[in-house]
Length: 502
Image 1 (tube, rainbow, N blue to C red):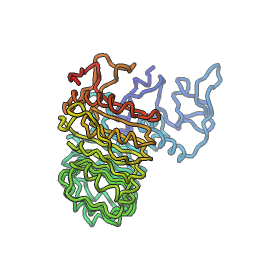
Image 2: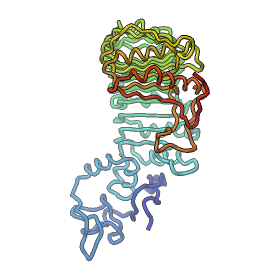
Image 3: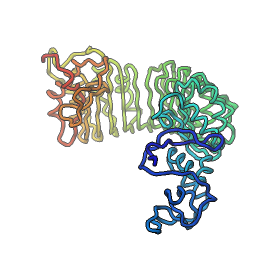
Image 4: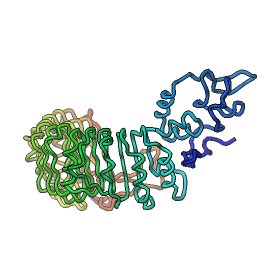
């Protein structure tokens, strides 16, 4: 008898047989493939019944083991075929493929299974060799394309996939598709012809990665598209503008490492657009927004012109990381974003700007990230240790405050003390001296590994991290109210030793 854990999961071949995909995890059991027409009333699962399964049994038949001539189990209801299809569609993909292998009832519904996740992790996590391409090819050749709602296809660095991609997408991308996530080959040109009228009417989410995408005004409207994500995609600003002008229902836009975009223009016709994220588009020079409902904006990188239009009073989340952003935010943001609830600012070398604006009346979450490889500002442990008393600025609704890249810089310590003193509703204060990196466990961690510690980035100067921790203990720890939690991310004391003397 072969256990489930040993038996390979199968997918359909062109002749109806199955090709091995992955190992099944589960309890031991015996499986036999049978025809529905062979079922007889009273047959049960196991050797005694010829290996019947839930989908193979007819109305009134039972599923279970036999003991002393009696059947142990339960009756199989007489369900219409569409109900069985619905049950099959709710199964995870590996379980659905297994069911199709065991049951002819589920075999037919597998050809219109609605959600395919075709990635190396899903299909080849426990096998060696280059089996991903033939497995994807087998699955898609045996899928009708009809009924497919969600397709996730990941082909990163799979050079052998290039000749197959066109055929795969012709099978899978048909009217009715709703979510399309394609991680393709970097030289592959995504065919605009795939976005037919039927596809444009049904697709709600389109995420492309590592390909060439050249939309034009002739593309036609994508009436249902609410989410668009482009990462490492070769597309120009003008081509993106054509795409956006055809996506009037768009709500969420992500642009990551799209180096050919030198400007981003968001038209006023995108009345539902509420969230925009732009990261690592290093050649982008200008951002101009006219969408009236934008309330969540994230931008990583430098830009010469940033115009967010009339939506600024509605802005609730603003995240920006670039040079001098803290200084500019302190000077300009309070008057134009009075309803801001979450503010994240990241900058380089900008720690000597301690005073926060006083008009963030609704701010609940504040994160400041400082990128400094070497300490270039006055430390609280150098010269005068006296801290300035900054003007009081009430932040009555601030719930959490986090500093990533905390150091012993006097301006940063003064800023933290000021916020702790004036944020009367503060629940959590996080001070990260490791610039976002961390060690595994600590001296009081029961799961701490004796020999392995997560390496700290070479950009992090451990000596200054210890200074930052000392500054926290001396100047900030005793000012944190008992109602707030103080979280300090520091170098692992078992792997690093403080080498400075106060």
